[in-house]
Picture (cartoon, protein in one colour):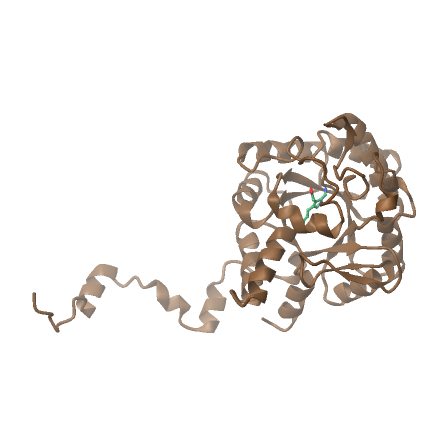
Length: 344
Ligand code: PBG
């Protein structure tokens, strides 16, 4: 057939097809795109996870998380001041515990002078308008790298919960505002709530890692807190199977019943369906953790020039908001806050 010069698609064809419905009209101008925007990302959506290390004036790079450093307490105070100046609402603190202080029961978790407690006191003393979230789990303190106490190959549930309640009290006495159990033992939210109330800490909030999956995306975090080399086996007997959704709803439901004020889904981007279902079902403050592996993926691709790091970062965070999250724990927090401040 000879090539025809007359267009296959005429304005009439398109008018017939679309009948006046043209989705692109609203997208033509920047002002219009802003006007029809359904979701916003704001600095109030950000929680900044921070790694702590012993010493003074220490900033230690974490190789698998380019741009992230372990900070000594004095440096953490300076960064907390910077975070507050950017109006980031809260920090989440994680320790790199000296290996000589790790043991089978994670006893350093109960030391009132441990890194997290010292950091809480020092940041509180600076009188900043910023919340302190502390992680409750034994893994940064145990010689085997598990979140709980072990007997043979088994992670003991009830004995661990007792230890976690003590850890939570230790953190609260140092000034933690929000207790965030990330261990996935059964009943720990209720037990921690009771312990806190029993000691008069009725106003301390609990942000529960309610739906936390046994994920490969935690790899770089384990480098940062120094558990990747020591971890014996895996965490599948307490963290969730990535194949499950209904189970996540059940976990969240139980944690809310036990007294969680806020709940979290973790990891983040591969689990946006869970974020959506959880928010839809329970309507409680819901957070997602953009975990270390997600940070590493975006950062590594950006470093190679394979994607635009800033845009990928902002887009990934917007996706959490669109899925229904009220906020995101992200290692990008200070960078994003800077961009948002400049109006990007
Ligand atoms: C420890 C804990 C982990 C993370 C937060 N708290 C790791 C794990 O469960 O092994 C992961 C965070 C991240 O990957 O950024 N209970």
